[in-house]
Each structure stands twice: as structure tokens, then as C-alpha cells.
Length: 174
Image 1: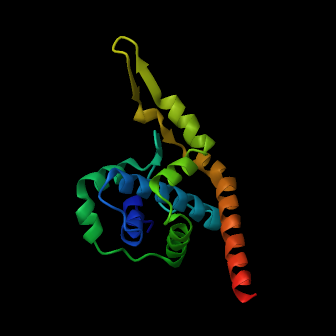
Image 2 (image 1 turned 60 degrees about the horizontal axis):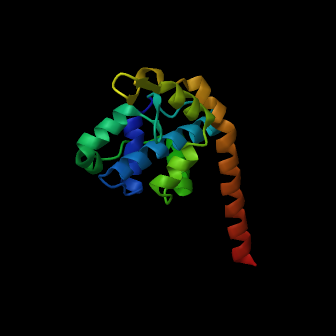
């Protein structure tokens, strides 16, 4: 049975030592986004079925964002679920690549996504009477089929990661 984004997120809460803060929650969101892309690229299937929404700081799984904000300590202390080998490999790889990045770096990288930009811009609404800007979550949902368009970006990230590992190994043996 496929895990929820929250169950997948528990791995990063434990392994990445995410803090009970806006930055910790935001970093979790980016790790979920990149892990979904990596998993889809490697295995041609979704890591979880929860939807991503285009928020100001990048793609967000809304139910995870809310749960993290309200139940951080419960999530932090909860035992990790058992992950399949594919899930575990994806989560480990995602954490190796992105786990040491700070929140701002991950936001910047997620903002390079044309799909995020498209749905975020479409979700911005304004009320000229009250001179306010707000975001309409209903139209910021990123269709799963369009997320697949981001696979080229993640392919490049994986290529660079593997290349760096090769250079490190070769450099260490010289």
C-alpha cells in the first residue's frame, strides 16, 4: 500500500533533524517535492498520492504543512513506518542530495520549476476594493501529469550528484 506524504515526511523529520519552525516545515515541503520527483524518475510511479499546491515558497503538500505546524512533536516522536526498498532508496538519495541544504537554497531550487511558477501565478488574486492580494488554493493545485514535466530537471540533479560522487571516489584514490 502506498504511503501518505506525511508517512514519507516522517523520514525527513527524523533524518534531517528538522526544527519546529517555519524553516523546518518549509524544508520538509521541498524534500517531499524532490523525493517525489526522484522516485518518479527512477521508478516511473508516484511516491505518494497527496497533491502539491503552488505556494509562495514553492510546492507544498497542504495537509503535511498543517500537520507539521500543529503536531510537530507527535510527528518527531512517532516511529518511522516500514519503507519498501524503493521508498527507502529514494528517501536516502533525496536526503544525501538535499538534506544539508538550507531552506532558502531549497526554495530557490524549487522556484526554478516552470510548473510551480505557472500555478502560483494563476493562483494570485487581488481585491481592488480592499487593496489586498490573496492566493486561491483551489487553482494552485499542480496536476500530477504536469509534475512529470519536471523530470528533466531532476535528471540533471541526479547526473551532477553521481558525477560528484565519481570525482570524489577517483580523487580519493589518486
